[in-house]
Amino acid sequence: MSETTATSERTADVIVVGAGPAGSATAYHLAKSGLDVLLLEKTAFPREKVCGDGLTPRAVKQLVGMGIDISEEAGWLRNKGLRIIGGGVRMQLDWPELASYPDYGLVRKRDDFDEQLARQAQKAGARLYERCNVGAPVIDARTGRITGVEAKLGEEKAPVTFHAPLVVAADGNSTRLSLAMGLHRREDRPMGVAVRTYFSSPRHDDDYLESWLELWDRRGPQDRLLPGYGWIFGMGDGTSNVGLGVLNTSAAFKELDWREVLKAWCASMPEDWGYTPENMTGPIRGAALPMAFNRQPHYTRGLLLVGDAGGLVNPFNGEGIAYAMESGQIAADVIVQAAARSTTAQRELALQHYPKVLKDTYGGYYTLGRAFVKLIGNPKIMKLATERGLTHPLLMKFTLKLLANLTDPTGGDAMDRIINGLSKVAPRA
Image (cartoon, rainbow, N blue to C red; front, side):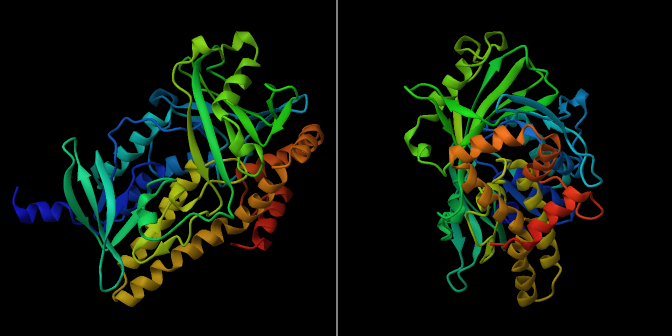
């Protein structure tokens, strides 16, 4: 390969670092718009990620928008809604019927799910490099802007440099690229942890996602209610994804071994569900959930943050995939518009708009979510809310819409108007 060819292959309009849902969605929408995109993924597909594997209608809408085949024949398991258990009550809530979102969710394992999105970005024209471990940003000494990234490529870890006038950080919660550009996590924003494993189970083909709002630690002399929730998602393949999501808003967050809590919680389940050590089909794994814009600004000096890198996880329910893909589309739209501007100043003006669009889209809703997280960090409030709330079907229907962020922005029902109104008046921090 000539030096000129190598240089052109490592130069693009945009570099996207990380081929998770955020990065692949960004690369897909950029490539569909005609821009030359490099998509750099540090591992090789298929690869595992810690996740509940459950997708709400919000995420389904994004998959449809990317042209993904989400039929059952293609291996997707559909679900009708959410089953909520707590306070001695069990309630099934169907996903709301809305003009803006489908009325079903999906389940798919992440090792396979992420690869499908990355391949779809490739089909659209993005150039995917697997086993491409990105290290330091390339900074223009004169302007302080990022103009590319250093990386180690392939099994031999060959050092390479990629160049582009814009770089998108889609490298997850750890986002080394953002840190190298001086963007640190905001300590005043909530953080969660997800811990999950898989079991062989007769409950594998459940057509509702199941959420347990009371997470009890019964291992000590006194039962203790923990700040989080448990989930059981049937995978349709003979296994269940069983896990828990925990918030950092309580004293218990740092002191407990959450893998042990998950084991104890599973041990309290009915024996015929099969959530026993001998039925475990994989190890217990954990991952952080960066919530409510916990890293800002989302654009600075040629770098845009999407998905977990920008802390876009919904603080109400711990959902990250929908917001990863949505932020990828928003970032791509902004970049495409900026690329069409004729001067550097005009392009920069368009790019500076990206954080504002994110705050207009999610800021008020995430502010409400931060208040919610503080409240349920108090086990007494959580217990009271569970016991009282679950006995009111209409209130729970409202709660589902609020927690899953599923409303029609215009022409919706009274619940939609209340949620949208609250999100509009809340500060967009």
